Image 1 (cartoon, one colour):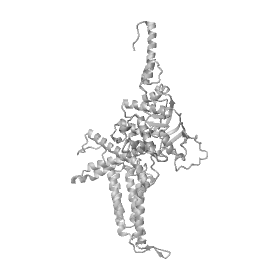
Image 2: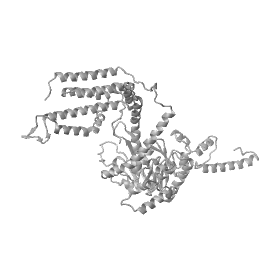
Image 3: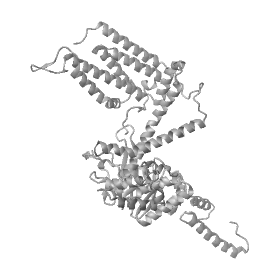
Length: 320
Length: 276
C-alpha cells in the first residue's frame, strides 16, 4: 500500500499551556515496495508520524467528536492536508481504523512489553482473533500462528505451549513480532526493532525483515538510530528534525552530506566516517556507505592508485 | 488517561507556590478545621473568601482547579441526595398542598439547608486540597509531610521510609501512565478494542494491558532497589538533603490568615444569629 502524506500538522494537548506542536507541515510519500528508513532525534516527531500510519494517533478531523469549523473570513486558508495509506483516508472519521490496523502492522520499541498471555500460542493468536470478522476455525488459527512463529525463526512445537515470560530476551522479541505479523499486514512499521539486541540478534532480525519484505510484506517503514543499519537496509531515508522533514534521500545521497548531518546532530555510518576523513585528505571514494560496498570501492581505488604509482615510480607505493 | 488532576503540579510562579510545603499542609488542616467548625453560612462565607484568595494568589487558572471536582462529583451528588431525602427535619416542604413525605422519605426545609451546607463543605475541601497539589510538587509535598511527622519517630514510626514510599509512588504515577499509553497502543495495534462492548468484555479487554503493566512495574521496582543499593542507600539517620525546607516571610502570613479564619468562624458561631 502506498503511503501519502501532505501538509500534516499535529499538536499534542492543543489549546492548553502544555501544547506542543510535534509535526509541522509534513509531506512524504512512501511507495509500495519500499524499505523506508526514518531517522531523527528523540522528540523530532518521527514517532508521532509513524503512529499516524495505523490510526493510533488521529488527526482532529478523524476523531469522533470532530465538527468542521467554519473558516474565518480573511484568514489565510491552509493548504489542504492529505493522509492516505492505500485506500484508507486517515483524515475521515468514517474510516474503519480497525481494518486499517490489520493491514498496517506496528512493532513498537521493545515490543516484548506487549506480551501478556499464558502461552506463546495465545499471545501470537491475540491479534488474529481480534481482527477476525467472524470466529476463526481452530485449524486456521493454528496454521497462521505456526507460520508466523516459523517466519520469525522459532520452533513452533517447542515454544507454543511455553509461557512467553520464560523465553530469553531475543526470543521474546521474536514472539512479539510474530504477534504482529500473524495477520499478514501489507505494511510493517517498526520503531527501532533491533534496540537492545546483541550484534548477532540484530543481524538475524534484519535478515528476517528482508525475508518478510521479499515475501509478502510489501512496504516496510523502519525507524532507527543506528545509521549503519539504515545505510545497509533502506531504499530511501527521511530525516526528521524539529517536527519537520529535512531530507528524503537514498542512503547514498544522504550520508554524503557530512556537514548537514553534523548540523542536525546525527551520526554517520562507520563507512561514511572513514569516507569523510579520506575526503578531508583529498581522496573521494563514492560508495553506498555499507561496510561491504565501501570496502570494495576502497579496494578498487587502492589497486587503481597502486597501478598508477607502479607505472610512474616503479616499486614504490603500497603505503595503505 | 491524561486528565488526572491528582499530583498534577501546575508550573507557574506565585505567592502560594513559594510558600513552604509544611506551612501549606498546616494551612490545609487549619482550613479543614474552620470549614467543619462553621455552624452556619456566615462561617462558610468566610471560608469561601479565603478560598477565593488562595485561588487568586496561586495564579492557577480557575478551570484547572475546578477540574478536580470531577473526581468527587459522584460523592457530592450522592451525599446531597441522601441528605435531601432522609434528613430528620421538622418542617416538611409542601408544594401545591402536597407534603413531600412518603414513608421514610421526608424532604424538609432543614434537609435542604443541610444539603446545601454539605455541598459547600465538600466543594471547599476539595478545592483547597487541589490548590495544595497544584502548587506543590509531589516531592516537596512528601518532604513537608516527612518533616511534619518527625515527632512520630519518637514512637518508632519509620517516618523516613514511609515518606520515601510515598514519594516513589507519586514519582511513578506519570511513568506508569506513559507505560499504560504505550502498552495500550501496542495492543490496539494488534486489534484490541477498549471502548466498546459490555462490562464483561471491557474488563476482559483490560487484561492485556494490566499484566504487562504489573510486570513492568515489578521490574522497575527491582531495578530501582538495585540502583539504590548500588549507591549504598540504607535509609539511615543523618542523611542530608538536596532541598532544605525553609520558612520565609510568607509562611507566618498564611499561618496568621488561617488563625484569623478559625477565630472568625468561632466568633461568628457564637455571636451571629442563625440563618433559617
